[in-house]
Image (cartoon, rainbow, N blue to C red; front, side, top):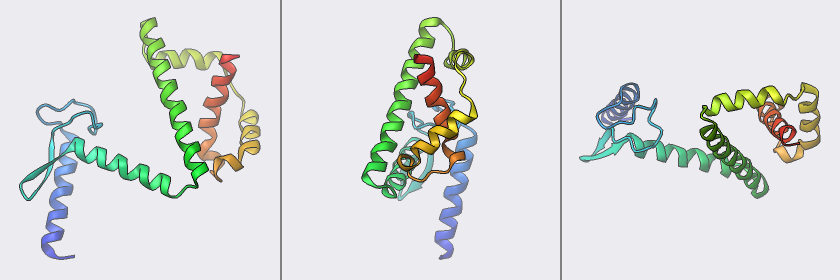
Length: 156
């Protein structure tokens, strides 16, 4: 790597790290800038600014592309379906919590007390669904399976 390229990389990294720790003017104040319009400039390329928001969107796109490129079409569909289920749950929880005048975290804590799933049920579900889980390790998917089973149990 040439010295000028190395210096540019170090400068960009320093700017990025410093901007993540202290939001600039007009920043939303959220930790790490969640892509919600943070106009903090993290780099200049030929005089054109790159904002934290732009960087976050690009990172998310890259991560999604990497995640999906390693999966079969069926596994990619399952990945998206799981994320859609999570997004729908998040919207439902947020709406219900708002209507009750509590936080989503408080609502989830209430519902967890009502529906509990033991480890054996999680293991059984995993064993029956291994093929559909794309070879994912039990420890990776156990929390997601538990949430799924708890949500099913609370609906019944």
